[in-house]
Amino acid sequence: MKFEKVEIAGLALLIVGVALLAFTFFSAYGFLVGELSILASPDIIQFFGTALGPLVEATIRILYLAVMGWIGSILSIRGVQLLKKEKEAAPPSVTPPVKAEAKEKPQVKEVKEVKEPKEPKEPKEPKEPKKTEEAETL
Image 1: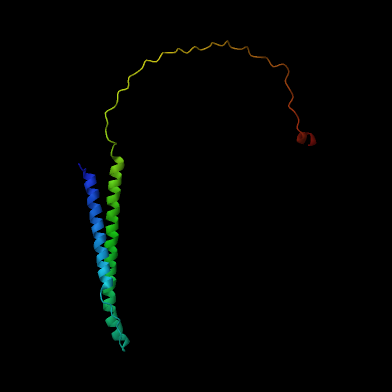
Image 2 (image 1 turned 90 degrees about the vertical axis):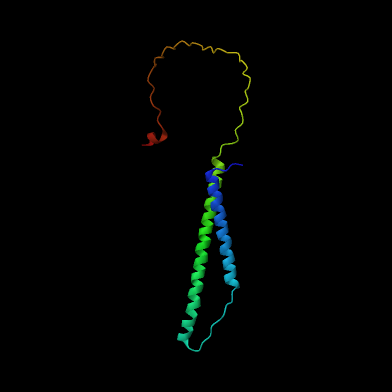
């Protein structure tokens, strides 16, 4: 089976996109399974200082995973579009044309009747336009 360049590019994009999506989901699963701890402290300033570090780290990981998922889905979509476009643009399988024996059809000549032009009729008397009920009442 011979692949064309567009098909190879489409398959490569699809495989890379699916692999990136799979890695994103495994990373997200590992992130969710990881140890979560609730911080408690009597001092509010110390609490925000210790809480913001893990919060910023979690936000960065979530954004990283979101961007990876977005890029993976775009690559997958483009790969599928390339493959679909290539399949639609590919000509159907070439089959040798079957020669049909040409049967001679009897030729029929069309006969057109020649009509003589009619003499124009002369108008007899000019007719008066009919009055409608509305015109009579005005």
